[in-house]
Image (spheres, rainbow, N blue to C red):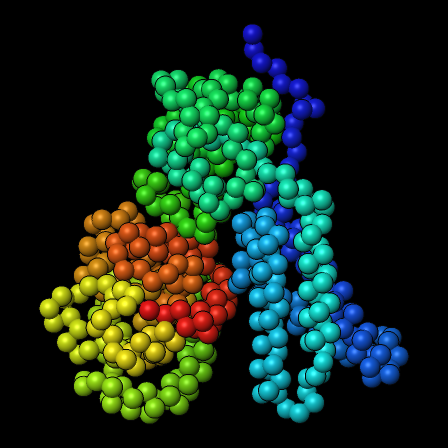
Length: 472
């Protein structure tokens, strides 16, 4: 007897992207109200009437605070699934974002001309925005159904299925509720990673309605059977979302699972491809040049001091250069302040640096922690060898070895390498080939999603890492 689903049993749930949009919208409303409250207190303190004649000359603060909030929130993962689903993590990030905002305002206040910025406005706004956004996060599960995990089925029992089950367990267990696994008819598994096998392709539609499933995760990287394909299509025709494993993995981790996509180049190349009508490369290059000129000023200021202490600390040159592989596989020389002994690779040859590396000098430890050793690369950026943001350039010896070992490794070379990148701000320092694989997953995510907004996100995160002295 064929299964006949009942339409009134379908479970309606917001998609993850829709929930993020609602979270951002609630924050925009909270920030706008917080600016109004701050302006109202400003008017009271100044003993001025709070009317349009007071608000209009100061209306730019609405744009400034909205823009600043969205940049800092994005850079601090405030809309990441694992953060937004946890009240504790959410309030920790809210505190960090508020403190960062105060610091940025104090810096701007210090460098601005006298009376150009209001002295206490940021205090009024900071308190109001913290309370409002915090309250909205507290009631958010009621308003948006965040507490209801999205019920999903995993279609497939291969390594990709195990990987996505593990990724959901680590990063999105509050957002996705895996109700079961769909196996091929010849599979004899009873469970996969402690998730029960609930049937085969012919059972998909029945399980969708009995378990109130909202989404199917198609994990199989090999050809599925006709029975399974038909079951997936039946579910799709009844309004169930279908998502391939690589895309969901990318969405919840910020990485591309290169070891599970086999020969599917479509999931590792840029989403939009290349177009002469795309303004992004031009804008990106303009920003590179502008920031490099600013960076060159900083470089010239610190050069005499760093040169002196590097020279006094250990014998050798002030600068250090290496061959690196850049855009389209072209080699170029990358420049740094020397942070290791002059004979650091005399015995080992080209090897990854590691935390606590004994070859690092005393002053080298400091300039690596603060990333000051990277300052001479401003010259590489001005020359066009590098960009501010992109995958970190590797040495040709490492590129050759890793290309043979890791799928799609050369895909990193389709864009200019960067002074900082998505892998650098999302992952610690890598010193092994296994680390190189993980960093490649982040780099490929950047290549697929590169935009000015993502570049700004990475630059803000980089500033935070520099302030925390998290270099190696």
